[in-house]
Image (cartoon, rainbow, N blue to C red; front, side):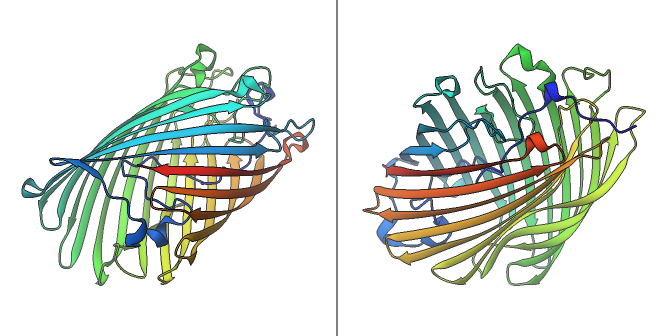
Length: 415
């Protein structure tokens, strides 16, 4: 018998967000967000920090006015609207050169207001602290902690499909520690992380879960700043509500191994890309174990000083809240190009693809998205940008097929 996911737990499918993964990093937002990979070294637009002793501070405020042609990401009866989003941020950095210590603190907020669909109005914020200790040349310890109030995107898989109430809100708590040693010939690293995802509304308690992960990696130098690496990892996922509506446990443990390359900053290529396989072990005795392709990484290639090509890849299992599914497996790939057209005119374009499958079912969906952006810099403090994106999704359920067009303008101010 084929198990069909319960519709009451489904969203009206979703478009890939413009960034397949949008990490929060405690780094000052560089000017020229459209093409920061090619602008960072331009002294004319390098924004100096305000300093008080060992502490440096910078701040920014972005105002984005966006037209969304399909706010609820529905296949029919689409609702369009204009939304104004304010994005203030402040960053503090302290560097103790003699002790080899660096500390960073980043605070961000997101205020979102729709012109007509006021139920979609929402506020978000995040605070992240980072620390790095250079024990000796080539040896570094890092740690970070994060709290984030996140807004669920109507375009995410399994997002809320009701249009009479606003999007879900989540509180995310995360901590991570890592050690890295780069020797003349060999490299070694270890990472530990934990994360709690807590839905704000009691109606969504079944979406609360914890994750734990560990990774070990080792490699050998094959060139200047280039390493061939291999890694092994394990992660666990435990839901606060032990069983779903069908009485099935959704807890899982995943093991995996990958191999690939790592390129340190400073050369034509930087970043890391590795591929391998993972083994998913569900806690539910009636679920079968599954082995599948695993990949992760992000690479930047700079054939010329004014051009950067990017590649982001992910393949693995992620949590699912659909009935009759203990997890979902995703493969994502995104290609991008960043170009400095003139010293004060920047452009970028991206194209992404995602395949999503649910375990214990035969259903899958494919999402394709493309986007482009142009930014004009008036000075090191002010710029304006225009953006456009279009995405489509096809699913084994016809009612989940849809498309979404977005376009907007943004004012960016740095202090």
